[in-house]
Image (tube, rainbow, N blue to C red; front, side, top):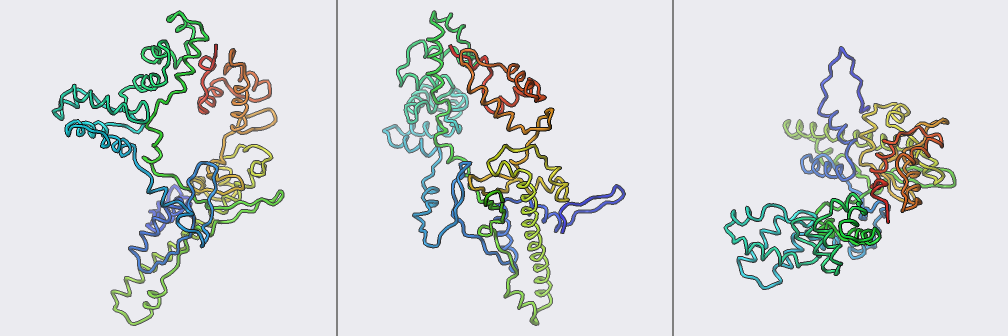
Length: 438
């Protein structure tokens, strides 16, 4: 059952419900597939699903999943405790609010203000408008806000970046020049205008640099310390397991986690009896749907394994820790396994492979290339060169994007300064003028 269809220009083909469902099943990640099958079991009595038993690990980018041992207790797993221990930033702040002695109106104002707090811990909105809308005294609103700003973490419930940083600076007893920079000169700080501020405050470049360093150690997003509880916790269950024996790659489907779908034997036997025609027609229709789902899921399994095998062969040196990712496009893999490029896209998105070192999403194996005199190298290699060059530069005389471009060109890489700047920005590295130290 092929999931990609070629349409002749003179032929129009209406996509059937079943075909659309097959395409969606291929695109589902593990949890979406489980959700889909769970709903199907609620609506279709003829389908039977056995879900895999897996211990969930919080995904940090390198931590692997582990199979659940029958002897493990909930205490060992820790998942329930982890989830139940979660609280939102609002709840965390509210607990502090109700722990102090306030008038009823002040407590109400505090609750309203916490409702204006964003995920970074800042109070959003116009306080004048807020006080007028809810008929509160503006002075009392300011008073309660000041109380909230004394809560933990320091800098929480600020109305601006400078207010947030200044609160932290005061707690750390920063000098007056540093605090003045926070109040008046954050734009100059962002642009690394050391010499300009040295002249403004009659200080040396070194002293202003020290002030910059202090400010950059402060937390501009105090609400983020608990932000992981405001968003869905990301768990990963790999679809594939990669084992390495010498130079051999052994790829297999993660059967432990894969749902097993089958026909319900009770209703299959019931269909063979002399039941009412309407009931028989109903069951036949449901079994037709079940059989299509079973075939679609098996096709999904085969497609993922086939595509992943082709990817691993292409990126074998990388997986063996003998090289970097090589340039590879979805079109190349599509041609190799004889499917449409869109099928590759659906297959690799949200599907993960467990390697001996870490979990990798299949789509992350695809990378563009930079042309050289001897062929192509991956973008990752270029980024590594840029990062390494910057990490080893003289911080008093940081290397410019043009200098990096010249070095790459001298090594045979055909790359422009604009591309170097784009890669540098993408890695979160500042420009040379902003990296300069004094």
